[in-house]
Length: 237
Image (cartoon, rainbow, N blue to C red):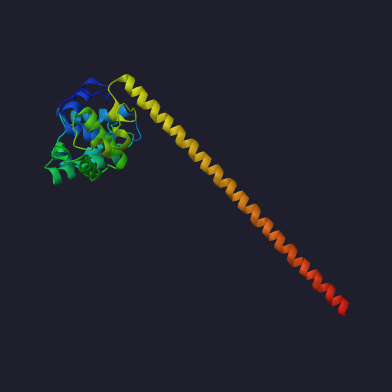
């Protein structure tokens, strides 16, 4: 697994991502709530602070948790939430040690189909469906890992010519296009959320008005009946 990667937009960090399966996995794990370049620079920063030229799942899994959290927290921090992400990185590495002998590439090297590979990625600690599908697309588009049905398993992220995620980044221009797509998606989601809230508010008001009208009508009917009864009693008297 050696390829040219432009996710970190930093030569040394991208070089590590291009040759290290574990670095690629850890970069994908870190890619949330921070800029993409920051996330994918993380593996290189971790390796350098461990005085190594690559990440080692066994070494990370066995590292003292508090010391590892401090390692990620040192300035510049590896992530906006270095403590929680240190736990996730160690959880991922422990899983790789237990299930794959510490070899990250074994997650995908013998996967018979895209569906099987997706299931394996979904089993990784810290990988939800979206993250798993993006990484599957990244493997197919940038690393040449293409079991049968990989595009279908990756969903929209596997589409050719798309600019949706890390899987579509080949340089600064494509990075800008992916970022623009994400911003547009956020705007659309915000608009949809606002519209839904407005609709719910209108429905509540309409329901409230209908109930008030119904209550008023019921009160009016009851009052009318009471008046009729009073009139009857008066006539009887």
